[in-house]
Amino acid sequence: MTAGLWQNWVFPGIWITIQLTFFSAALATAVAFVAGIARTHRLWIVRFVAGFYTEVFRGTGALVLMFWIFFVLPQIAGWSLVPMWAAVLALGLCYGAYGAEVVRGALNAVAPAQREAGVALSFTPWQRLRLILLPQAVPEMIPPFSNLLIELLKGTALVSLLGIGDVSFAAYLVRLATQSSAEIYVITLVIYFVIAFVLTRGMRALERRTRAGVGRRPDPGTGITARLSLRRPARTAPVPTSAGGVDA
Image (tube, rainbow, N blue to C red; front, side, top):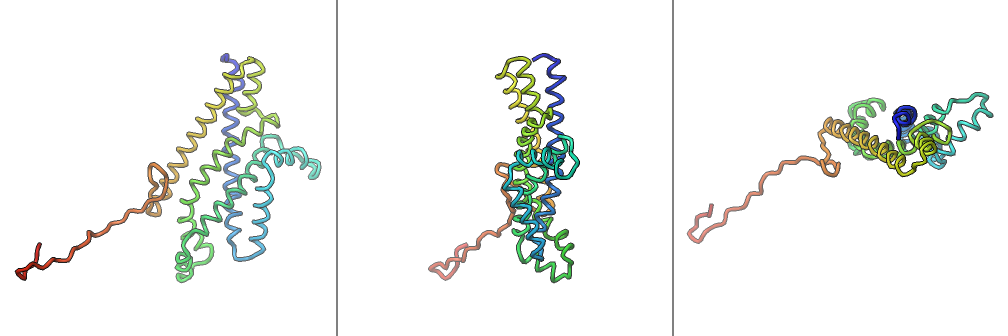
């Protein structure tokens, strides 16, 4: 490929993909925590609303939702979003529904004794959530959130169908200009892999940081939580000898 194609299409496409991933991930994280916490609320109506949102947006594909927001919503509401923000909204709401289940599961995995301790200390529900539940649940959320982040990165390729010049759209235009499918799509695969690798390393560092705050550490090979324990060596009983003494 010529330098002009890199400068005019590929590099801008990489930047747009990074922006889409960042803004969609920020929206998805906020939605996931709100909906996930709401799914553990003591009021059934709050749990019902959060569960309804989760089921609807998990059951509808990101592409269909993107088309609905961009093409149908303007006819209903009378206003429209630019393609970039329509894509961010669709991806954030869709992947936020998956993240809500991660948050709910991590909160429910906290030992009941921890909740009871907060009640015994007369903590309010917000204090129990902020001081007891979330510090222990967040480290367990990082690995599945990391997987969702990589899926979100790959899901940004759908925005090319709205004419947004991301990496996939840039690759399509360059292929038309150069008639070299093999080279451009190999480069596209490498670009996505590099971005995903950087995101994975960042999430792994965040996981180590959050686990260190609660006295845990991930195993460097598997990421599984390991606890350090010190055990006293077993003491053997003295064996009496025939002379009435004891063996050392």
